[in-house]
Amino acid sequence: MSQVREPAAPSPGLRPPAVPAALSHKDLRGDDFWRQLPAYRGLSAQEFHDHRFQSRNCVTSVAKLQEVLGDLVPASFYQDVGQGVLRSTMSLRISPYILSLIDWSHPVEDPLRIQFLPLASRWVPDHPELALDSLHEQEHSPVPGLTHRYADRALFLALDTCPVYCRFCTRSYAVGLDTPKVEKVHFGASTERWDQAFAYIASRPELEDIVVSGGDVYNLRPEHLEHIGRTLLEMDNIRRLRFATKGPAVMPQKLVGDEAWVGALLRVVERSRQLHKSVALHTHFNHPREITAITRTGLDRLAAQGIVVRNQCVLQRGVNDEPATMQLLVKRLGHVNVQPYYVFVHDMVKGVEELRTTLQQAMDLEKQVRGTTAGFNVPAFVLDTMGGGGKRDVHSYEHYDREHGIAVFTSPTVRPGAYFYYFDPVHTLAPQIQERWQDGAERAAMMRAALDEAVSRPRR
Ligand SMILES: *Cc1c(COP(=O)(O)O)cnc(C)c1O
Ligand code: SF4
Image 1 (cartoon, rainbow, N blue to C red):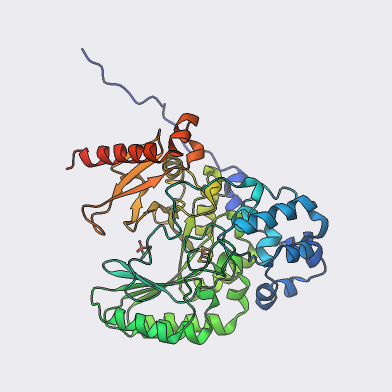
Image 2: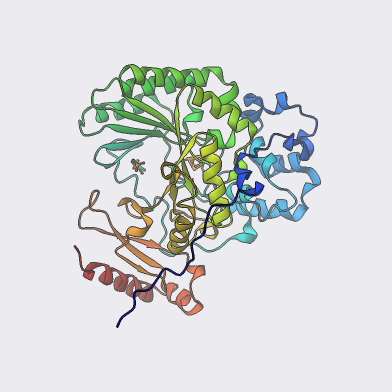
């Protein structure tokens, strides 16, 4: 007789009261944390939290970094950053706010340092299949700076500058200043270029939803933000707008003090209400430490006006790949009324191979995060397929060869019949497999084998 197996765990009984550490998402830093930096030691909260001070004093060179930090770090650290910058696809730009939140007693491991300051000593060679515009955004562009990949929504790159520059930016082909490594395609804030984009959007009735991004809308002049918002909202076909900005994560002071910019945003939101349409702000927090008391003050202002804010996070090794960190980020975002929307598996981007995780790590992390809080505040873990297949749920691969680090996805709604690869970082694979990746013929054979498996997989 076969026996029915009982679930192993005994009944857990009633939940015990939470330990204080379980509530740490509510503990937002409100001290004078900037005073740890020699250059900011004498600044009052009013001076430091002035948004003009923040944007004027962004650190854009190693010399400036040295002026601000002085002897907090050894000379070897500055050399390491200097050499890192030479290799980087992004120019250096970091706000005083973020700089002050870095733990300068452990800068190498610090999750905020990792995102903004490259260190040559941590460099890992790029994956051999990697490209600068890995998502092929430029191939899906009917007019410069507009990507129409999904049927009902489009990505509108309104400008090509940001309040800070992230090392890992997917749009390093366009965003920021040219670097020794990359001469970029520039999409400046230009009303003529915008008019072309508007004409295209108005001509396509299937487009209902526009992501206004860049670059970063924090850097749009208020009248431009309002012009773009109003023009799009007045189109009959457009139902939803999203403004994408990293600003709240790196310079929350602007939400508190830049009356002209916030006012323009509020007027666009107000107009959307009159038209029964929706406008949301999409932002980009990657680590719980980026959220402080001043962040809450800024976001409370948006919450008071009923503005929906969602977060798109990039999964990075050493930044947010530990379950406890991602759980805390998700809970803290919810606490400040930001809805965690996506966690992106790191795109295949040049010069930041050390930051990528495997697909398996992303799936493991998802398992640890789901259930932490309300389902509507649990982010979807997605991967933007190389070659323009669009975003896919990390679990939805057709085939995943963990040994060789190759995943194959399909994308029925974007490119029916096509297959798309994603590759785990080579340095995470066994030594003999790493060697095979260095050989062109071996590489082609491994990729072919994974593709054959995906294609032959039975379909329902
Ligand atoms: C991400 C993205 C969008 C928006 O997709 P959602 O899944 O709705 O957030 C639109 N266009 C492009 C090209 C994108 O990459
Ligand atoms: S803010 Fe966004 S667009 Fe700008 S560099 Fe960072 S990731 Fe790229």
